[in-house]
Image 1: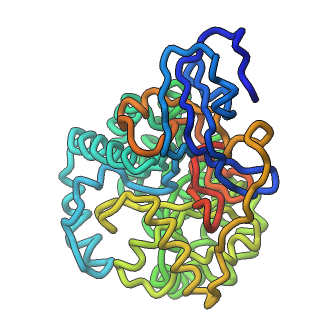
Image 2: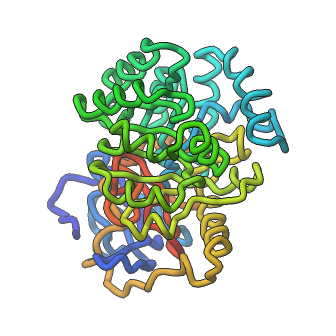
Length: 414
C-alpha cells in the first residue's frame, strides 16, 4: 500500500531502512531503501523511501543502515522469574524445582512479581520481543506492567489442584477480568500448571470453562521423558493422553515444552478438535541435560504449530528469543540427524510496493518504542495477540522463526 500525500500527516515515517518482507508463498527477503508509515498508532504502509519523500509527518527518522522487522514473540515464559536468575545453578530438574525454586516462590509477594515482570519486559523489549505468553501467579501485577510498557501478552494465572477449586476459579476470574484489556494488547488463558499437578477432574472442569467462555488453555505437558515415563508407570497413560481424555485437546491449547511427547501421542494431537501449538525452549533442556528435545519435525508433519520460547530466566538464565532461534535450528538438526532440516527459506523477489507486509505490520508501535528507545533495529508492538504459528496462527501468542530457518512462528504479527 502506498500512502497518499492528501491524507492527514502521518505520526511517523521511518525511511531509508532495510525491511524484512515475505510473499504469499512464505518466501522471505529484504528490501533496501524502504519506508514505514505509521498513522494513528498503526503501521499503515511499508513502501519505498521515494514514495514518502513528500508525505507530511509529525516525525521522521532516517534509519539508514538499520533493519525493520516485526517484533518477536516469546511463546512461553514466566517473566517474573527473571528475579530468580542464577539462584539454582547446575542442578537436576527435581532438585531445582523442589529444593530451591518452589520454596522461594512460596515467599514471593505481588510486589516481587511486579518488579520481576518489569525487569523481564525491559529485557525482552531490548531483545526485540514485543509479545509474550506468560504463566505465573499474582498475574494482576504482570498485567499492570504489560499495560504500562506497551507490549502484547497472553497471560494466565497458574493454578494447582493442591490449592483447591478456589485456585481454578481465581484463574478464570483473572482471565475474564483482563481479557482484551490494555486496548486489546492483553489476551488471557486458563492456566492449569501441568497434568502431574492438576488432577483429571480439575483439567476436565478447565476444559469446560474454556469452551464456555471462549478462552484458550496454556499449560506444561510432557515436559520431559521422565514425566511421560512416570505417568505411564503410575496411570498407564501419557500426559498427552490425559489431556485428550479430559477434553483439554478439544480447546485451543498452548503446550509448553513437549520434549516427552512420544509416537502414540501424535494421532491424538493431530485429531484434536481445538487449535494446538507447542512452545519449545531448547536452552533450558540443554541446561537440565534432558535427553530429548521438542519433536518439531513430527509435530509439523501432523500440522501442529511450534513456537519459540525461552521459559523463565530462572531455568535457563535467558529471555533471548534470538538465541532460541539458533539453538532450535542446531538442536533439531542434531536430533533428526539431518543437516538440511530447518534450512533457509527461498528468497523473495516481489518488489516492496506489491509484497505483503511481513506477517502483519498492522501494529501499535509507540509504547514499545518509548520503552525500548531507538535501538539498532525497530520492532513493533502489535495491537492484538494471536498464537504460536508456523502456518496459520493458533490460540494466542507464538514463537518466532528466523528469516534463515525454521518455523515461521516467531514474529509478532498475523
